[in-house]
Length: 595
Image (tube, rainbow, N blue to C red; front, side):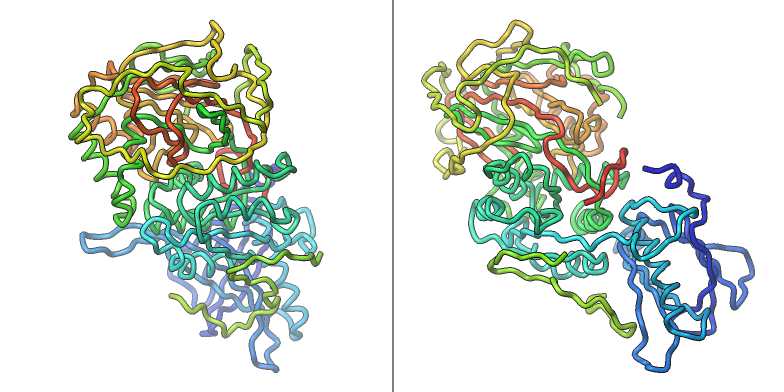
């Protein structure tokens, strides 16, 4: 980010304009790096009050012309979605509301001159929205204007409560049109449809891939990109998510990264659409996950065993409840708390700024040109939208360095998995609290099909079944849950790892040992909604930042999930690959490139 971007007082443009429709009102506008300052001139107000429209709330700016052939005026409209108070049954709340400010340029007696001024303002505003460096020292011309972005939107019509297509037409498409984003919208028709689709697309046609669903569809996209022969280029394609699923964990992390208050439902969706329009891209860690058969996949969110994975999978029957399914599923599982015996080994991060939590105590860790397009079936597209828009148009709807660690040459290569049979490992019998009657884990459900995944080598991991180095820490015993997470959120309302960053190169490993009371477990998850659990002291809860870990279940039955999707049960091992992917965040604590 340039120095001029940080100087909010640096005025880029200043002018006096009328409004549309004309009511004799005139305003003085001043555009700075952070917002548009609006002051009414006529009629003169009683005070010197100014309205500031933050750049962060804007999504786009269009130049317009009246239908009247004799009208020499030009116009520019600014589309924004600020937070406003909204009345609800129990009082009021804050929510984003659409505002359109249309200003009339009437400085000259000829349309061409007025249009040139309108284009100058529109260009400057678009540059600021997309973080294109501009300053008062340079001439703002249309050549600076960012190229219209092209996005592949992949929508799961069955995600969440099944209303993702309605949300798309009501909110997503109208807003990204205001942001001059061109798109193709594809609806998935079956499991792994998105995975197959991204393996065949021409990457040069797109500036990003955005899923309109929950976290599961993004897992398909990431692994589809990793299955391409050009995976090293493909995985750098910016990916984004617009939350229309049940969990929406990554969307919650993106929302938090932007500095917004925790949000759910349509409020979270609007925040994420707004951030998508701004287009900032940040590196994101991806985690290699190898299961007992040698199948390898790449994860962006979490690996879970025990309580969390049980709730995730068992609550599928309550999908019609939306995100409330997880709350209900948690209550059911707490009432019949299970424990699982296993062996957990991990490679701790030896870093002074992020101390290892070896004691069984939960504690915070640090501070917080025209192109040829391929055919896509069942699509909705706006490609070829007119450049000129009419003023009478109305929208139809109201950094850590890697430690010196031992390396291992995995044999065979990651792209060629070897069958590793679970018979290599000894399993204990089913625990007493897991009788055949109350064991409702659907072990007979269809698991994801095995795919050939490429990717960087897991140089910190020996093959499954081989001994781990002495630098690793091993814990064996009875667990309520084991969770490796690499985002701040496990769900839109579960602020699980507040100290996590998109590209910190860490897996935040949590485990809860047997012996914790139901009351303490409920208190833990309630505190997790606000992230306050990091200050709790509980002798059964451990958090430790790691680079890699191996989990060997010693109980015959159970559920393992990767990014909320069920995988084969048995030994599993994990290694983080720092900054392997690119995520569209729209904003953040560190400004990066725009797509």
